[in-house]
Image (cartoon, rainbow, N blue to C red; front, side, top):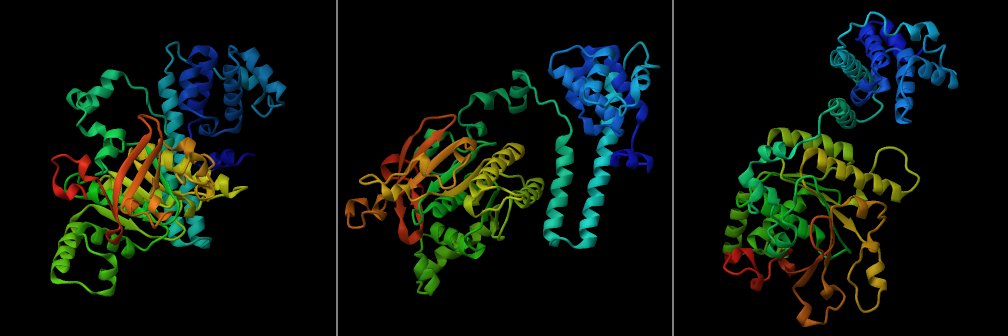
Length: 456
């Protein structure tokens, strides 16, 4: 006997009559199967016989064949499942007692409701078993429990088809048509970059990749400081698998205060620098910024933590530094497959939470092996797999002074190369880089009449 059949006998939530009437309604009116099949899966039925009948109905529908008793019985016999589905007599009795006015919506709702309650019970029991046995660390069990319960809610069928009028009503016509409104996206603080991209939009996965020492972490933290700062004032979550949160905060404070990091770490500061650091630290203390340096973090951990932040404060931007240091749960045949699983998880998470996610990525040694021009290319993405495919935008950070340190004209200059953008152009953005502050900035000639703090 199937586990779910046994579970039903033990008194778990189920309504066999609603299940039978749902299947019987399809036999009476095969045209209603799209409604039933769109809302239910085989696992939503508590009895094995009902699951088998539903699966064979689905197979007939997928082949475009009409669902009736003869076709259904033949399909079950082809797979040697007629007896396990209750036999021909039970099949013939499925539509007994069905009223002339079918209430398919009502039957489906009851079946779905009972199935959800069973999933809650199974999940709770699984969590209890793991907690009693202590098979994993408490934090992992807690994160897995939260993820499992969230998945139950997410699995419930929702109507995601929207008419244009519904979309515009939700946003507001003026905001929808106004390019300066929130629909433009989250500003990065880099003017030319924002012009080319329209800012980071909700649901997007943005990959920023570079070779070591190019400053990708500094660039991402500069964006984080701008987004959580007073001009944008949106919550930002930063997950760092490479640096401690103390080091991240030090970088952000020194960059905002324009104080040399080395002088800060060694303690050789004058009074002006101390005052600048105090102001920058106070501003960051009040900012909606969340830093996490947990080692070995995976997508499930990140998902659970972001859910909590979003529920409490909302979310404007997520930064993950960096992708290749993350771990994926489950078994994978290669590291490339594992990284591909991570990038796909990041994209799905950005869509679910409706927040832009910036993932930093390492590059292979490809740029070093190319003579003359060391600018990165999409093929240089390390352990790329599906990173390029999943990302809405791929940007490369490049400073030629790293390769040509004797060239004075290259010092302090950086390039942000947009190599892929689903909703905009590709191209290059010139930036300034101040090494002692680990800070990127807009070039003065790009800024027009903006305040001095916005450019170098």
